[in-house]
Length: 88
Image (cartoon, rainbow, N blue to C red):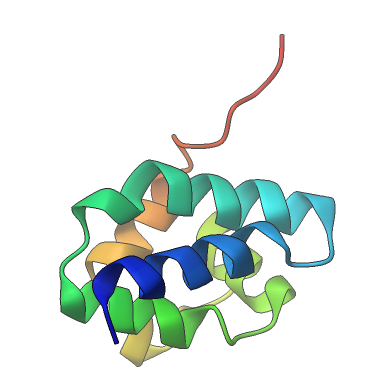
């Protein structure tokens, strides 16, 4: 499948999680980081996006242990939380 199509599908999935907080966290992460991903990182995010929102959010904020298969550059970037806009 073409990279552009994969990223468009992931964009939709990242922004339409069903819970506003997950949309902001996962969608915001996708918007901030996806342009720099290589094919392996896209594949990993495709796998990650299939997980439950509560699990992804817990891994991102550090309240649960990240499964071995997700440890690496994407989860490190997700843990940074510097991509979530906070209104003042």
